[in-house]
Image (cartoon, rainbow, N blue to C red):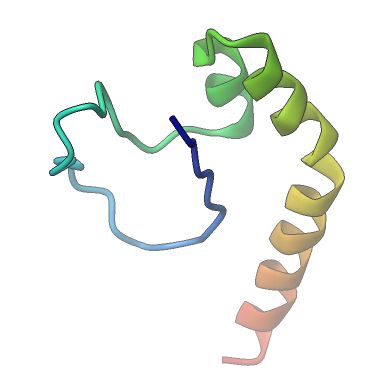
Length: 68
């Protein structure tokens, strides 16, 4: 089984309804919430190792909103 993780920003706050029956749950989480909820150590390590990239994206999003 392959797992794909995506990082994106949206204003949508509604519930998510996965169409794939093998997906047990989908939701919106902060970095800290995601780290707590991930049960697989490899997934937690992936998230920890990409915190810097996540922080860079958050900074870019904040800066881009100033010019809209």
